[in-house]
Image 1 (cartoon, rainbow, N blue to C red):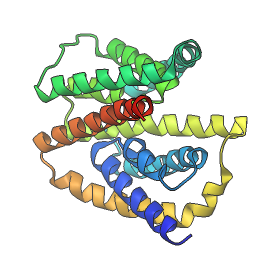
Image 2: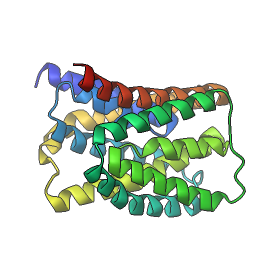
Image 3: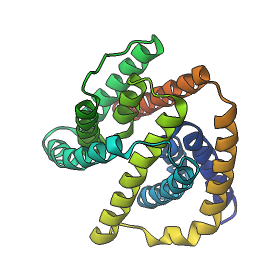
Image 4: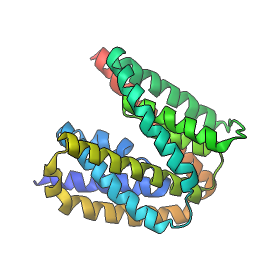
Length: 246
């Protein structure tokens, strides 16, 4: 594969490092780069498989830190929310939806950068609502992560709990996605021929991310999360505006 294999390996290392530190970002950071030199259908399967492997490793490292009492209802609501999201995508222009979501993510990220937060008294109910909205956005625009991340940030969880909860939420999503792709015959099995590049990349990225996570301060950790969210919003807005302009 030559240079393509090297790009794949380095991208997986970079995306894995980011998600290992923050708890999310593998798909946000890795997918746009992978799209430059790998077929889109293969990228979806590859990114989901790589993220699953990474999340399982981080879950092992964060035993006892996450709250399944919060994550399981949130994930269940997310799964339900996907259906109306997919339906809305059928009747509304997907580009407009993605543009709108990108703008909302940017605005909310800016508010968080200014330390804006909402006091929530019924956290479990709010978690379910956040999961449902995330699932809806995922079904309509494939962007479910930012809502969940922003909800956990709003709750001012410490960096260990934040990361542990996110990787558990996304791990459930990865398993579900791969299962659905397999049943529907949309999984690109060619990715298993790339395991020799994916696995070492995830292992190195997880190791680097763990080292970075231990050293990063709570303040810098919050800034990193906001940067990833802003990047997500910019990618969403930029990709759609570029279609209209060019």
